[in-house]
Length: 613
Image (tube, rainbow, N blue to C red):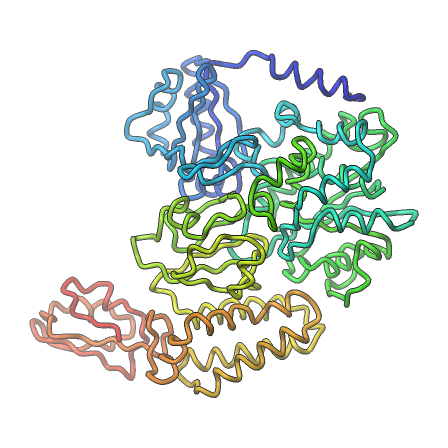
């Protein structure tokens, strides 16, 4: 039991003095790593170490952020501090990795990940070569999230100790306000101000709610933090509780995150047993408990009032604000709602001070932002960069450029609530205001990269279809308006749109933005408006020329066999619709009335004799 600041400090010091083995191997066991087959690799590593009786320790960590290279491991020489990161590890490489692990050399025939892709530590400075900066993901991929001592060895719960014994609640709030930390869930509201509103309310009960209902397509930042460093969120929630006068925290997490739930449950249980949560934390007069509430995966429950209703056992629907949750939230009591990433910044701010945090990022958007880099990019993964980093740096430096060296077309930031940004805007510095000026938004941090093979009309239709599925249906603009938008986009993709359809899209989108009840509805037309603003020529090609430039919209496609055809019959033999005819060694032809436009003929042709028009 750690029942005093002195015991916490002494325990952490003892952990740092403990002798380490010659080599440590970090094994990435987040969801992406497990899905890629890291568990069998982990078992093989353990077996190989045991058979050799090697002085090597295995540490099972969360996601390293290198999702493109899973299964991933990092071999650390504890004497020199140097390490080698291996990606796409195969079973037949395990013996060679163990053989070379203690020698500080790279195993032959293994994929080595460039270290510059990785991050500086919390108090280091990012450089042009090392663009990323590690605050939120400080421990993710470095510690075993299921072992409390690993977190304590990395200054864990020292921020909580500091606020309980060296700071007043108001000083904590003032520090967070001074830091300029803004909510990382999408809106970017100043975190300290939200805490101040809740603290000012006189109530017999207040609540701290962690929004872990991460629902944007392609977003997995919060999941990675909870899987790799759950104690950082628990500690921050307790600090928030102390600041606003609350003794109860609730983590609202979608049940589709079983590994994150499991590791949260383990972390909460460990913290309670050690006196870091529960009654009289660290021997103080402050008590704070945390419970978990499961969500059913409704995107609308990411909106704070809908989330609160879901926790209360009601239908997850938003309500008109004010009153805001900080004034009247869960069960009509003052409630602070922050998302996982916002909480994950708090402990570092308390440990290092507000001036330290403000030096990172931009004056209006201090700190870092975690992005889930996905789509047509070579190095898919988690990216944490200082605010003000450009999109070009993220996509082409950190992400390695476009997959298969195709041409970049656009990047969607902010998920279904955001917008598309094109090539000539890539040097935009990322912060809340600059993305809004481009017709997009920060959102929770999803970043989906698209190439020349993506149709922007179809992209807008995809995001709108997602919004339709996830709408709670409470307000008419979202329920009916978005349905009409989707129908118009569908007509354009089918070649049935007119120029009047474009004007109707713009008018209805702006009407929905002005009249929808909550943030989901108000931002749902953003993909439509941004693609119209940036790629209207693609809309016009669909309408005027009945042509999809990217070759995605099937009803506008036409496959024709050109004069390069040698009559090999390969296309005819593979056509699932049996619509290709022709004699051996004679030019073939496609019956357009029967063609299903699957593209198999183009895929199998060895003579480039099939054109897609």
